Image 1 (cartoon, helix red, strand yellow):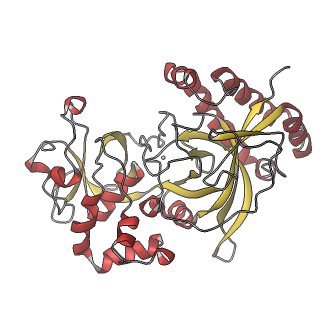
Image 2 (cartoon, one colour; image 1 turned 30 degrees about the vertical axis):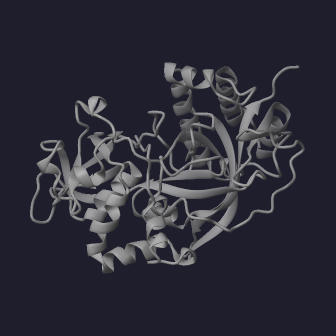
Image 3 (cartoon, rainbow, N blue to C red; image 1 turned 90 degrees about the vertical axis):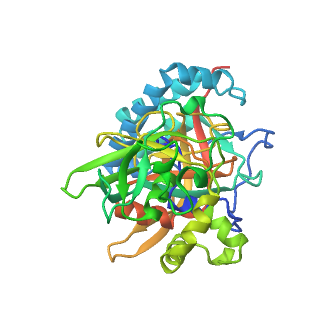
Length: 392
């Protein structure tokens, strides 16, 4: 996910990379899977995104997200990414044409039935082979949190986020670890290369760490002012899941691990933060983003419910996708219930824990409710990329 969200994770990313035993009853593909992250199928597997017609604001949101992908596809970075993309037939030009045509259909279709018929006639799907080679994909959620912060350190606000060092590209490798940069207690950054780079201070150490995981945050200052911070760079280490570390140490059983369980453990054992947080050696640097929307790894805004993070070493950046997932939804009686839905989305982000063809992180928005939804999204689904059929 601000990595620019480019950590591309929800709070569940802390517990990501855990083994996962759920299974999805996948429909057979007309073609045998290719030895690549995607395989070609002939048409939609039983559905499309009805929310685009049932909720007009969802259509507007998707059109806006398509515009962001088109903006990315007009960059040299996009042309370079597709010049080496490994799946035959998925080209820069075809991805862009597909987005333009799909947007036209959103504007011009008179009904959902007309829209779906046009998709079936004009588009084809490339299915992610998933984590099992049969299309099973693990979906999690991420969001932009809101935390209390201060521009100056005080007795209440002690844990800083740091700006990107001007000479980061010239730091010798291996880079300093999280432990070496901020100490075991998270308060020693002023004693080393981070001195003077403090951007803001947080009340809680775990909150500062979660912003490292998220890659961005919206902050509320004591005077009522709000600001946003986003990803500006990182040290050269892989992401380490703190949830996995707790399991490895037999602190939490794998079957019991969830975000509430993890947060509760650290609230009851704050001294454990000094032991576990340094195990994620990767360190994130931030910049103030002036209250603008959170940005994904493609340097364009991510859109709530319409942007996903995938492994960009495998998946086509900026492309249009159709996902089927168990999406938690808040009911009228105030309870969260998961419902299997189809959603059209744009692939606009990535993340350290989002690796392989079997992982997708869905951006779900900003604030408390988005965080509640993201924390509950964890289940099996399917991922398809929609591309215009090529002329014979």
